Amino acid sequence: VSVEQIVIGNEAADKLVAFLDDAHWRRVLIVDDPNTAEVAGDELSAALNAAGHTVTRHQFLERSDLLADQSALNAVRNRLETDEPDGAIAVGSGVINDVTRYATFLERRPYIAFPTAASMDGYASNVAAMQFDGLKLTFAAHAPRAIFADPAVLASAPKPMTIWGLGDLLGKATAHFDWRLARGLFGEHFCPEVEDVVARPMRRATQITQALCAGDPVALGELIDGLILSGIAMSMFGNSRPASGCEHHASHFWDLLAFRGMRPHHPHGLQVGYATRFALRIQRAALARIEEIAPPFLTVAQPSKEEAAWIGPDNSALAEVRRDKERALDAASTSAGEDLMSFANVRTLLDEAEQVFDEVDAALATAGFPLAVGFAGVDEAALRATFRYANRLRSRYSVLSLLESQRALKGIDDEIVSSTLIGDHA
Ligand SMILES: [Zn+2]
Image (cartoon, rainbow, N blue to C red; front, side):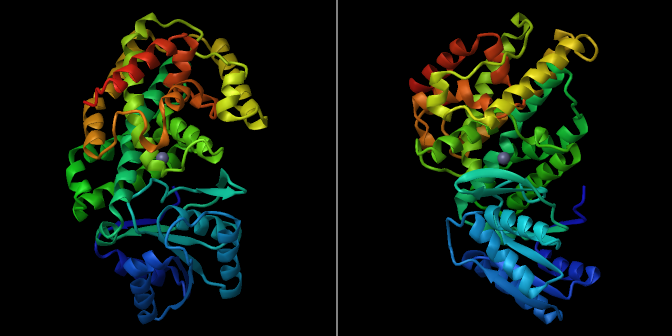
């Protein structure tokens, strides 16, 4: 893990100045926007000037709806070229971090993250989520050299942003179930230590949900810690498996529907938290049937007309996902018995993951994520399509792929959608 220092506390700005002194950065570019300048960028700039650093700034004009697109990227790259700083500081949340991360990566200069909202788990990430020509794609980039977060700054962020971060963190409950499922049925590499790096702050978040919703700075410090650790866990493991499962696939599916004009865009963490309430129920239903399942545990369906109506015409990316799944099936059939667990052991693995489900579900409800159709622009038809097609966008194994292979999806999605429609909001 290449992040050298993480500071969470009201001394964050002072520690940042000290870090730059140690790293001998003389010239620094601050990237922010009018909102994040008010809560942190201006003060940071003054502190760095006072400490003898030469500070230049790139301030985006947008107060909201800034996109991580080509023009934002070019703007920061141009500043890096003309100002020639030793490095940049991203003062902001998702988009400002992605743009600064990718621009500094392309210009071969380091950067530091100064989060202004506990809204997502990407601060420690080494990939940049960019949106070119409307399409959201992830590009290899670099992680920040260091992360400095001041809970008082996080507390001044708009309240919904904290709820997004909480949704992203609580979604790890179903991500971990999927990971264990892939371990048990396919022998996929599973690391309990890495899982614990994420699971501990996730469980903690269920205990401090009310304080988080009230904007308590101490609780916000714990939330940002958990979100940063989630990013660290992904770096440790080498991909997003420790932090992303079917609840994230649902969110990606909804992003695609939004891109296709079939529903409005909503923030990542809001979608993940909402999807998690359904994912918890789907996984519980699968666990209840685990002794009945039989190989193959994965089927690779050819694209259908109904599928295309939701995810668009077949393309090379979707075909690549199918090829990945076929390879996984082949590997599983040739290595059968080598590293696979008995059903009793699979059950034990999943039972452990399920132990947090009640607390996670209650915390999501407390934070305002409803167990109801129609939230975040997802109507009943879209929700049913999510259960069926969200696993077409990624090759990663999840409970949805298991249920599809067992032809058990239909009964379970009926069970969940109808219990939701009749108002079981418990
Ligand atoms: Zn996420």
